[in-house]
Length: 262
Length: 287
Ligand SMILES: Nc1ncnc2c1ncn2[C@@H]1O[C@H](COP(=O)(O)OP(=O)(O)OP(=O)(O)O)[C@@H](O)[C@H]1O
Ligand SMILES: [Mg+2]
Image (cartoon, rainbow over all chains, first blue to last red; front, side):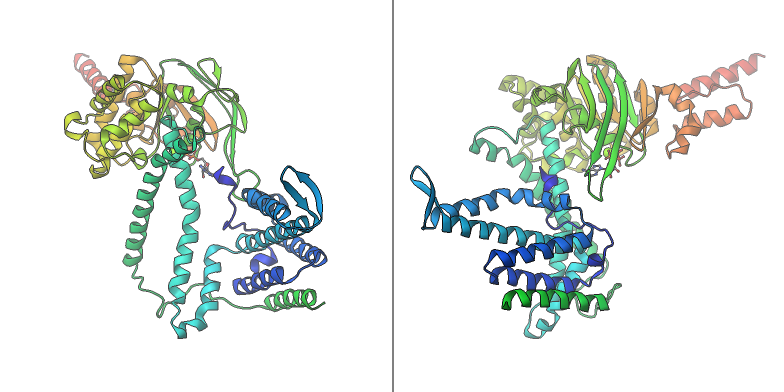
């Protein structure tokens, strides 16, 4: 159940995509997202899909793994498809009782579904190919110019690093506590909705106490190592653009420019 | 209750770069009423193995048979299995959640559907077993207790279910020596009284030597060695080769025997060593 969640996970393969500067990838994903919302025909989506497939192939991440990451979203995707098919007025294809699927609805629905799938695959490709630390380094560096107008770039990035760092830990902890309570006969899977929400108490209480304990420990450990914010902080790994970053950006931007203007 | 494990294989995160073959083709036979010690260095698969015995983990391959019932089958009721097989996790105090100690210990018995009178008895008995004063602590919040007391509450929570098979995953890690001895003493008495099957995971060879009848040695997801406690500790070379050891006193007796002093090597406790050495000294005087 919990092990299907791949969002925010890193999948190292050492491919060119992995080696790109995080800033390049963040910008590319932004361009990608904007394009997804601007293009409005299936042809264009076909091109985007081919592009995404190519990126996946170059990144050497198994297709199976990407599809697994989509699984938890099946419901939302189906829901989007259904709502649109039923709600939009137009030429009726099939009627089921009071509900009827329209041609326009189906078109719009599948459009949204494809958009959603692309969105998820595109962004998860970013996190799969970039370690959380480099990712937040990239975000911090991109936000740096905004420091002048008072955006706490470093603090934001640090918060994100910590949050990302602790997602797997919390999942692991949840798994462990769930097992410990199941060993004492707790049942998380059956019963009415009320009974099931009640059964979450033995899970949530230990989870929160342990999260607070961890937060405390981490704060203490950071203090002990003299952390005091971003001012004057140097880093071991400096971000640096290479030729491949320019190539990547040029490819992405021109690709989507063509799509958008043609 | 007997346990049979056949060709058990467990792989974590199959097909991802983090794939770990935690268990590979493990075969184990445990008879009813045995006190088993499970040893192996960090990451050798001990915790993974024991979580299969009460159905918390499903095998990728293989079978687990508890008292004639194959618990890997789909139609098996898990609550039934968990009533029979009690499992105390590593750092069990992290699972406490109720407002009072009493309620927390009663959680397990309540889940298996006992009536309140029986639950009351069980909580009293379990607290008694782990040496927690019932009247004094029953209404206290478990979060106000010391780490050692929390550990006892958590162990009591499993003991209160009176499992036929009791599995303890490093139950005394991080406790003071007195606390450790008290808990082990109670477990020993429990075993003597009820003849239940116990599996103890521990990194302390002294504790294993003192308590268990038989040892299973895990190494990199496989069973490397099993046998009676004495027999296994005779293999000190093989144990040392995989980063384990033998009890200090066994080591000492081995060194003495190497120096051609006629003493037995398979001595496991200081008590036995004393008897053996005295026997030898007396023999020398008489000669
Ligand atoms: N939930 C999990 N997900 C992925 N891998 C795991 C998980 N739990 C354990 N492992 C891996 O499986 C292997 C066996 O772990 P296990 O916890 O069974 O070892 P252990 O013998 O109990 O060690 P220890 O003495 O440190 O408790 C290790 O390599 C570990 O990294
Ligand atoms: Mg373990």
